[in-house]
Structure formats: C-alpha cells, structure tokens
Length: 348
Image (cartoon, rainbow, N blue to C red):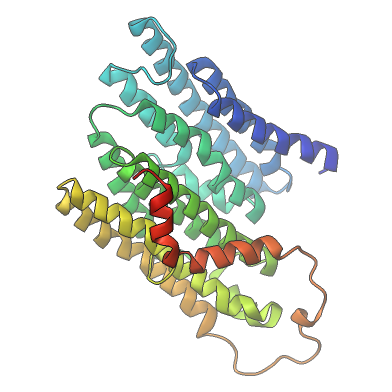
C-alpha cells in the first residue's frame, strides 16, 4: 500500500474515534464509528489473499448489522424522548438495543463469534488495531449510556470472561488466542463499568499496554503459530524472557501489572456485596490463565537443546524500532508496586 494512502487511512481512524469522543449527538457518534469501520477495511485487505478477503467480508457484515441496529435504536430513542442526547436514554428497550449493538461491535459474548475468525485472517499489525483502537469509540458510548439496571452489563461481562477463557483452550493459532484474550479482558471492563467507571478506564489502559507489548513481540519474530514460539530464542533471545512475563501479566498473575486491575475489580465487587459474582469472575479467569501458561511453556521449555549452524538472526541489525516495545514491556511487567500512587490519582 502506498504511504500517502496508508497515512490517510490511519488519520481517518483517528478522526472517526475523535469525532465519537467529541459527540453528544447520536448521529454524529454513529458517523464517527462508521468512519472508523470504513477506514480499517482497506487495511484488512492490503494482503490480497483469500483468507484476508473472507475476514474483511465477515467484519463488514457484522459491523453493518451492528451499525444499523445502533442507528435504529438512536432514532427510536430520539422519537421517544424528543432529543438526540447520548447520555439521555431513559427507556429500557432503547438502552438495551444500544448496548447490544455496541457489544456486537467490540465482540462481547454472546455476540463474539466473528472476532476469532476475523482476527485469524489479518496480519498482526491490523489485528493490533482491531484489538485496541477499534474498541475505544464503542466503549466510550457504552460508558455514556449507563443504564439504570446494571444486570445486562454484569451478564455480558461474566459471559465474556467465561467464553474468552474457554474458547482459547485448544487453539494453536496465536491470533485466535489473542482474540479470545481480548474478549475476556473486555468482559472485565464491562463487568465493573456500572460500579466504578474510573476503574474500567484503568483496566482498558493496562489492557492496551499489555496487548501492544504482546503483538509487538510476535511481529518482531513473525510468529503466528504456537509451534513457532520455540524458535524465538534464535531470533531475539531477550524475547524468550520478556514474552512469557507479558503472557503471565495478561493472565493476571502477581507481581505483574496485569494483576492490578483484576485485584481492584474483585475488591470493588466485594464492596458492592457481590461476593458470588467476584468468585465466579476469579474462577473463570483461570481458563484464560491456562492458555497463557501453555504459551509460556511452548516458548521456554520446548527450546531445542543445540545451537543451529551459521549466523544467528539476533546477531544481525534489527529492522524494527524496538523502543516502544521496550517501554510498554517494562510497563506491562513492573507497574504493580505503583498501585497506591495510581489509586491516589484516580477518583475511585
């Protein structure tokens, strides 16, 4: 893809999300989400292979269905209330329709089935954009509507945590595993959104840091299958140490950064007298932890015992800028001791 076209598409992605963030009108917010969708479709099809075309087609139909439902719900809300204000959705029917349409857009269970299949057909860079940037505008709208009854958020969140962990059990394709990981982490965000929006914001920031680190590690080694992880040591030896730590941080193990949001979410649910819900969420996260441990095992304990002949790839000059990966990896691993400082800065 030509650099000017690529730059225009990236600017359009930023413009669409910014328009949604700045909107208080349903129609303008919908327009921003549509700009986002139309900008990422050419990025998905830049590799002219059947799998990418199939993934793009699935993504387009799912997003078109969700957008039509969102527009219909917004028009219905304006008809019933007489205004287009995003934050004013007093009717249960319209707020439920809006929530389900946005849940389909970001891939929350049970409207998640498109996400792993689409991720499998994309390259890692486009998959990173789909897993992080494309979630921001719909999550902002979900935050804005805040229905009076939080049961729908609780149901979507808990089901996403269970499905995200259970779905990644027998996967060997890393992009599908990352898709299920995204579903599970979105479940944690939605679960706590009704009770503590600042904590949901902290969760998504840490999720983006961890996901960026993991995708960048896989992009450096060009790894897309679990069997390829064992050769990482011959390409970039330091990733043999850092990537398992990133995976364990995604799983929420202490003393890594990923433990912080889960610990604080479980603490908040306990304060809200939702101990059974907190217990179910904690137990369901063990499913995700299993396939993170499986990836760590494939990367560290299955290395060949002998050195290959010839020049090792890590002795060559790197072709990618590794500074962003170094910064985000450090944040992914080492932020847990800063929890008191973060809590003092955010209005929990």
